[in-house]
Amino acid sequence: MNREIWFEKVLWSYMPCHWKGFALIATFALGTVGAIIFGQMILKSMGISDANEWPLLIMLPAIAWVLAIAKRHT
Image 1: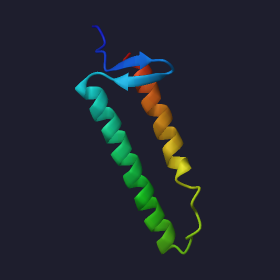
Image 2: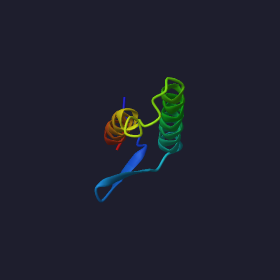
Image 3: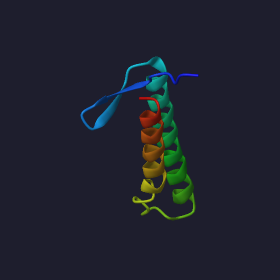
């Protein structure tokens, strides 16, 4: 079974060329932003209001996972 092409490699980046590529990026972007907002709300309710670097713990693995999927579907 052949893989579907969702992304095209442009220079050193991957650009979506299929609706599934756009959907993947939108899903991960909205999910990551939602997780960051939810996490900041939880931290603020616990009294930790100065944890501005903690969203990187959510964002970096999400970016790495999307790049791995984009590389697979090139």
